[in-house]
Image (cartoon, rainbow, N blue to C red; front, side):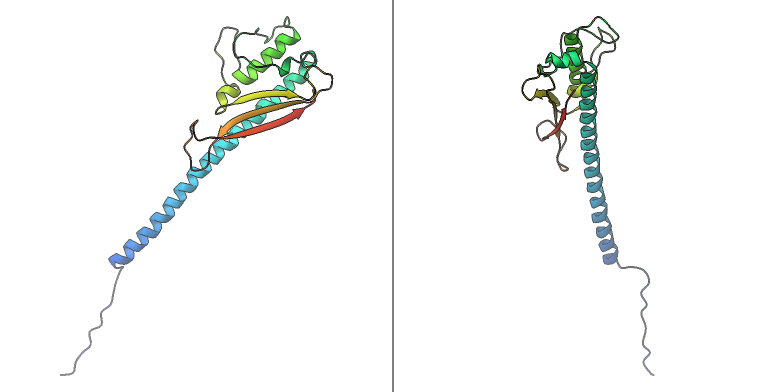
Length: 177
């Protein structure tokens, strides 16, 4: 009797091929997850830069609207979040009081009424946010260039968002009000 060869046909995948394909897919998904986290942190850092730019431009516009306060050098003073006169819709504020009010609103946030709490502002909107205004040759001189410097904390793409591991970013805008 002649010998008949039996042909074995394989149908489907072996267990090893399935495991390898699952490993490749899982590595790809982990890469996509890491990319998403990096993208979210980059978007948060871009938002901080945009916020800082908006506050700097707001302060520059306020300075241009109060030339007497600029000429007297009040915008170069230190900023305190307490005290000061509430000058919104109030025509009895002096240029110095208006300048102090402007600095407080940009740094510490706006108040809806004279007795309400402050909201927003550099201090509340940016991580470790600070505001500094310097002038070349003194702020009380005519035609002095004022330099608005806003600093805040940003994170690396692989760091947690916290005060301890933040990088300091700075936005510097020179203006001549």
